[in-house]
Length: 276
Image 1 (cartoon, rainbow, N blue to C red):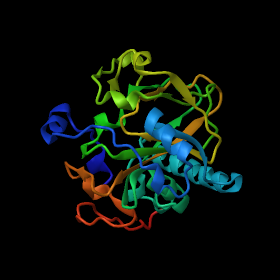
Image 2 (cartoon, helix red, strand yellow):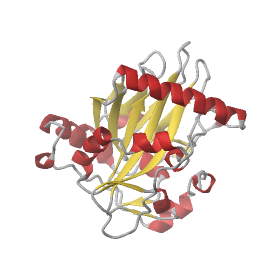
Image 3 (cartoon, rainbow, N blue to C red):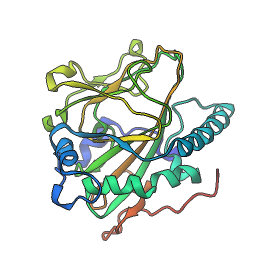
Image 4 (cartoon, helix red, strand yellow):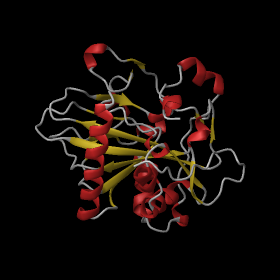
């Protein structure tokens, strides 16, 4: 199943879906764990960070697991960016996607009915030279309407020195942006680039300690520089959507109902894989 979803939809396929890519604000009066100020920050700036999830001992255990998983993937011919849709293959990643504390944070932004559908490790090895160009997550996803959130879990400490993620605060209010195909000399992990991010808002650092998360809208402009330090920077991205969001091109098959219910029976509700 992982191989089935490894190909990014083409621009023509995405245009044929007729997606609704307008930002949907979170309702602060329905929050349970986030403060009203945090929800307001999400609505106005497009992100919430940092949020504590895992203790030092817990994230050390997750890091040890990832180190072993990365070794296995590399021995099979993959690299540190190729572990995608991991919750469909590996039980411990499914456990992180469904973690109650993370789901509670996400639910305060998306509502009581939530589906987790994505999990992708972005592991920048020391001095590996690869960047993530400025982009919007929604540009890659055949989802509509745009009620989706990315959680970024820091497996290693992430700061400016080892190329933490950067946000353009408030850029999610500009709608879907024009992008170009990335040039080879950009060494982009992805394949889209949005020019001149400063025109859309203030650039802010998403610095996180291992075990913390950030959450951002799928329309928020973000990216990261190449890691020129001697320290690794590994994070696990977790993707969530309100259950009433529709996923085309078979992407609904990636789903796990993590909160409430999917009354439309649109999403799959994948059970925990046995593989480690």
